[in-house]
Amino acid sequence: MRIKGVDNTEVEKYRHHESFEKLFKQFKRDVEREGIIREIKKREFYEKPSQLKRRKKVRKYRPQIF
Image 1 (cartoon, rainbow, N blue to C red):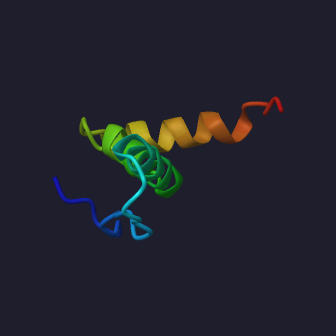
Image 2 (cartoon, rainbow, N blue to C red):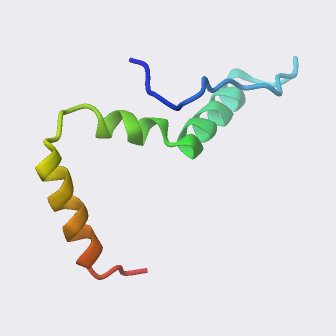
């Protein structure tokens, strides 16, 4: 699946003494930061434009709790 506007994520700072676990953690952190997983879950199912508008409208007027 290709997502428009998302670059390929790769671990650039590879050192010979680093373990696979450490590199994998770094990769997961970068993917999370870029929001790739969130975008894939959002696009998993088609959402009609009317549903999208309704969801945005409800979100606009919902009080935000911090």
